[in-house]
Image (cartoon, rainbow, N blue to C red; front, side):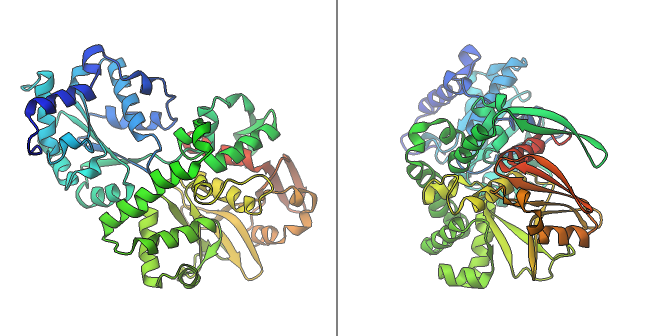
Length: 476
């Protein structure tokens, strides 16, 4: 039901305003001029899929470009021959639509465009759908009732969408999470692809594309910019925002999640506790934690911390990485674990940007690299830690969960020059009968044979780029 005093004519006028392509077949130039995110090619097939009767749920953190991706999808549908008047877009947070259910809004769209008697071939986009109470129930009903119409919804409250999608959308919804920018996307978005040189290399008897750079000093400069400002398209491209990232990222992204999204979804009463915990985690991203030491440092009880960590993970602000031992075995009780920000620029916004010599640079390089791995929903990474050693990133085989590969993340050239200091890595490789490992550096690329091992040295920026790129193109 519309708000009191809102007329049907006003609603129809607003709908027409939000769908300018009904007139000239084009989305607004503001969106059309923006470069497409590389994840666009992964998302578009979900929209075009018409054999499986499912709604697409586009979710992700705030400000990663979900609305822009929707408009790019609309233009692509038009370019592919879809009637522009069969593509509906509505932003649910628009005040004039407050209190109107999505089925009623769909019928208003049909009336606005003069297609009230047609029931097939429509593409219906509902943006910021979390602002509609019980949206998941209504969306499921629409999918069941209108078999020849494709419904696509999006929302910034990733935690809310995922929770409710899982509760009510089984077999009816297909989820797609748009993450913060990878370093690969950042390079592409800023038209810096010329810095990257693809090369062919043998790895475990397979041909593999690896990536070099024409200038590692320039690439490292952009890597540090990515760590400070690179998670969000708008921040990446705006020098004005970069002069005060706290105002944009903290106020518009972090605070809205901590102070509005999570409290309303989970009934959190003490938002200061949640904020305190997140601040501690953000400042120490990449460190090993326990529930005991988190409780002491944040002043929040252990049971509450466990809940808050799960909420912050659901909101895609942090990611917990579990520990394995020297043999690669998981621990029965996860007493210790590492927590990383899903995007290193969150720390810069809360505290201050860093440079190449900052004391925290090592942790932020590790956070940036882990952030690329977090985009791989099909793959879980671990770190190894035992009494006398640690290895930063471990991958396990899918069949028997044995160590398959290892990576040591360093923002230093020291371990190329002093390979004897790689005792922990060599112990882990020997224990698990692995022959190769990657070690990142500041600017050195080399392959060293040492006793029974091959150490592949690679600049951290190139490794970060490679992981992000292979996430989208796994065969490379």
